[in-house]
Length: 450
Image 1: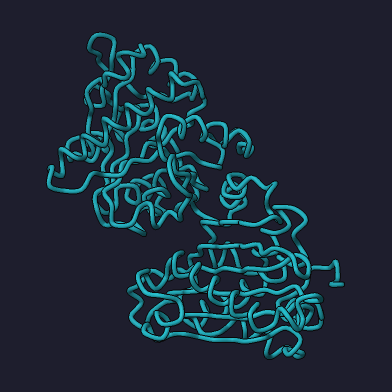
Image 2: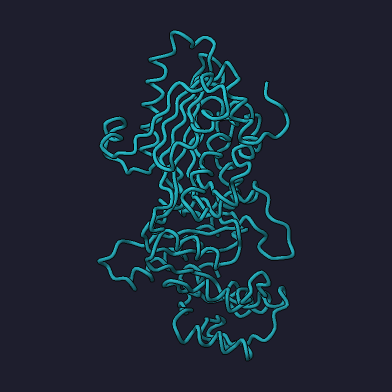
């Protein structure tokens, strides 16, 4: 049995090599063969490694795993798993199946290229048996690699792969123990995990939504994606090369009436962007945006059940959701701009704009100016929908914000009617005049709700 102490990568690989019940194959595309290498160099590899293969050439890879999918994709990963698992059982099940927990580890990775122009990411998968002769279980991960050099990214993939195999056999007691085992020594600083898919009887009682939310709340990912329809995918697939509308908020009211109001507001912003782009362009994608951080600095971070309660209400009205690790809007800009150069629009109420101006941003050297510079990077604008004068006044009192004045029309205040005292007011006026903040009319959804 393995030690109950936290082991480093060397000792995890050695423990698996010395465990006579585990045996499997390795197939790695991209980033070297760093996972298999650990098992080959620590000693006793013949006790674990049935085969290791690296099908770098596309024609070779297509011949083994089939053509028709992108080289680095979940589809290619699943084809690799199916092929390697079938071959492993065909060759070894009769001779050692009664005493062996088989596994197949596969990955398809795009590490940093020589010019540094690509998006370093990959898919990593493991199929394994919890007991000899038992049904297979799958763990599929999408990862983003954060190291600045190819050789460091290869090294990080090697550590993560060993962690995954070790965790599947020895740390499967809880969701937390599995994820913490996989993340040890590499996730957060070197690798980000933004999608996880679990299959098989070992996971039949696990709630996958909790796992996704935990990736963000534990700091393993900057954001995860919850779709209203279809299977969950990594944010890169939801955002890739798309024009995007983001609707950030707390969304504390989870009744159907409020959810429908939110949905109509997002739909009106999507139509606004579509009008900007012209009908010949593809329809923009819209997302509700929540944060796993505290919504204000003086309150605790939300618990995962509360997050899921709010997410479920938005999904029920047909909205897709991005859950972010951090609350500041400029972090959302940075994440989305990883995957698209198309226009990005936020749709927010005046309260959120005021909060963005009132925050001190003490974690940034450039303070408020740096935060706004990051927020409005690369074709970003804010669609600002109005508030009632009564709600605006009450909200300003609740956050102790001063220096704001406004005029109103029929009890409503638009962004163009809002003013801030100098000197900050000059910056607010500039953003309005330069169309970085775009006032919207009172949407029908708000008029109906009022």
